[in-house]
Image (cartoon, rainbow over all chains, first blue to last red; front, side, top):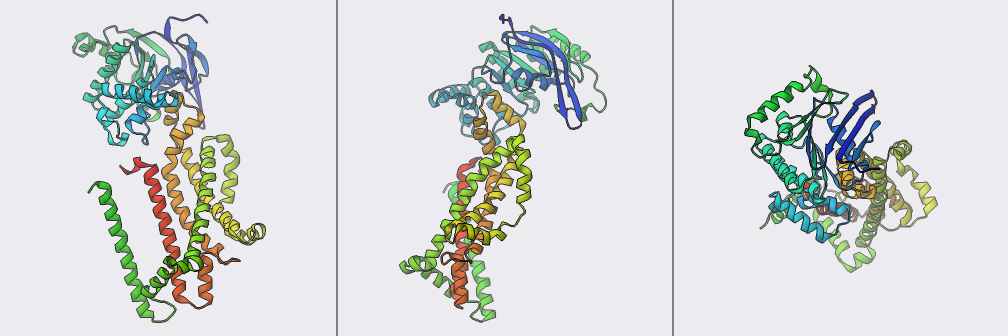
Length: 264
Length: 259
């Protein structure tokens, strides 16, 4: 297969879940492509299949139809350079911060010395050094999210997928973490795909914004947002104009939408 | 004094207080009944100490029976855990296996296995094997059912987390499924422990001349009520020590529960 310039490419992705109550169409023909080293925010109404899209890109879910390519190759579950941060952070309560952060390396048999060195450095960067012997239950929400970021970064990914990573944090903590992730993106040049239901988060983080339709999800608008990633963007009037635009593009929430969807 | 020391002292005081309360009620009951049928704590504990802490008792008395019974219960519990935990985890994670095995397990679970004691004795003889087999069988089912249910409840998110980090099936069991189930496994082990000691007593009352169950029946038939009660105390001490052992293991193996 010829190498594609795109880091992520989705072609007509469709996913249908078979539940006891019948089939649920989560995605119906979602297509987009994302160049290497870009950040992309996927936004859409509740239950529109945003998380499903991310699971497909991570290789955790096989699409019913269509094709997903990462770095020019069809996704496989064990692509070692893809890291995903799940909605509830996916931290294990039985592992200390350093064990959680080093899990990916340990699973790959990286050796204790390399694990210690890498994890120590990353926890230091994220301001978690003094908590390395703590368990997740002893941390605040923002600290837990940092541990999840540390664990994703420890395996040195080139593609970072995030599923509503900051949705349960307070506004100040959330902004701090958004900046942390952008900072990492600027330093490492990895490709970031972020699923969110926050309009401001999408505009601040995504240099490309994909707006999805209500379920079954398709990508209905693609917005280029080259100013995203600048630290002072939030204070720029253009930022607020784009937020308003995105809001007008989102399908209006209908009564009852909040009760159905799995993902908030 | 650090936090752990304080907690240890506190537990010691709590258990000591409970022990004293039991002794007082017992003494009052003995005084009220005032018959050899119910000896008081002083002669009973003296007989217990003679049986447990003298060379003679340890070779040919209560101590010897205590050791035999301890051996039987501990070996049974180990066998039950070693067989039930892996099978339960596997059933909880593997739907096809579960569909075949779960009906069998739930059909056999409520059957009173002690009813098979005569048959087991015929097959396995009169030494340790039938006792260990029966205790293991009972505790095996208790741990299996709990472990399987716990493994089914491991969240999809944590499995996804493991998969996305490149975990193999074996690593998923080791790092995600087993630790998630350990607290419930320990709870079932604690419950199984009570069952084990009770069934131990039952198995040792038949066709044997060793063990605390035999000691009790023998004392009873000799009308040696002080010995009888010393045996009951020994059975209680055995259960209590095993309980402490499980508690200690749980603290060592699941430290995140005690923060």
